[in-house]
Length: 91
Image (cartoon, rainbow, N blue to C red; front, side, top):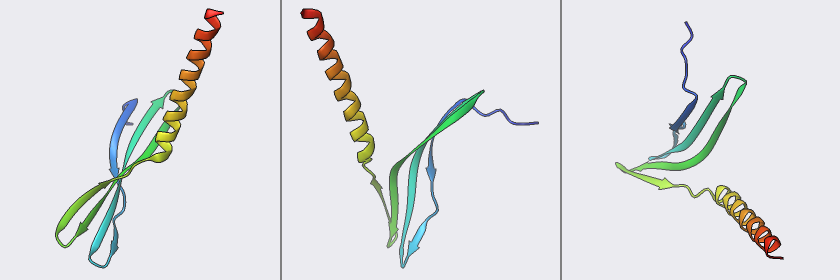
């Protein structure tokens, strides 16, 4: 019997570790999966890298500049549209 998977799933995945000398670097990503009867969507974004060196573990967050730029453009377009609509109502 096939197992039923949830329609919406948000998880953090760990990639394959990369070992160079005594340093191990492991990438992490956030994944949003949406399953619908007619298809689905999977959205991945980088989250962090975990660096293990000399018995110490450090998590370094990744700043997703592309995502920030896209959200900024979206916010600016909504603001410009709203201002144009308000200016049109006043005249």
